[in-house]
Image (cartoon, rainbow over all chains, first blue to last red; front, side):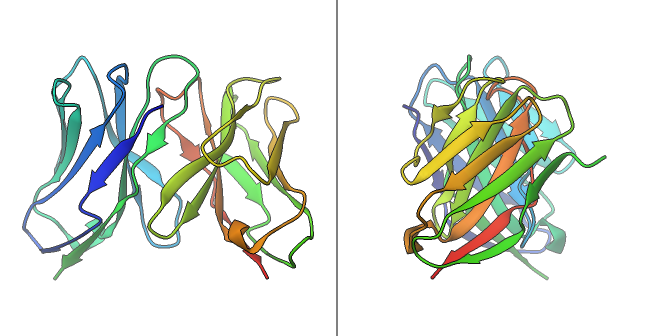
Length: 112
Length: 113
């Protein structure tokens, strides 16, 4: 089955700097790659996703890139703010009734 | 607009006791899921139901059973709780399969002594 590896497990950045989180996946049939943000004590929520027919997608300060050949995808957050502090999870899934497989998460701390 | 509602939010059990976590969604979603979250382990799938009437094992199904009661409700049962089942449990739903947004409940924190 699918295996998703996520790095780093923790990341500290100064406010205003950029943050990059990277994930690799094992199943070449996977075609959907979402990112979830989980604030302390809250539920995970989708912040951005990308499908395999697209190489990059942006939403304001957040962008995701996908390299299908290398089987990796990354989350980029620019101009980080204290409210970006959270745990971020990447995930992957393939078509059909197969559920998402999550990475182990990255705890991002934005230092003011 | 409730979304995904799960109960209870907190529960303390003794080893060997049983309990059921309830989950209901009001978005007319076809697929429902139960995940557990442990420190450093991410979100691990216990069981899922791709559609009403079907259930399948996920990555960590041992010690759990599920019931898709109807399209709205998906319950998780611990028949004989063990300390290793101490965790935060999240129910989630999606419109179709795993290639769409997951909507999570608020989570249930379970402690087994």
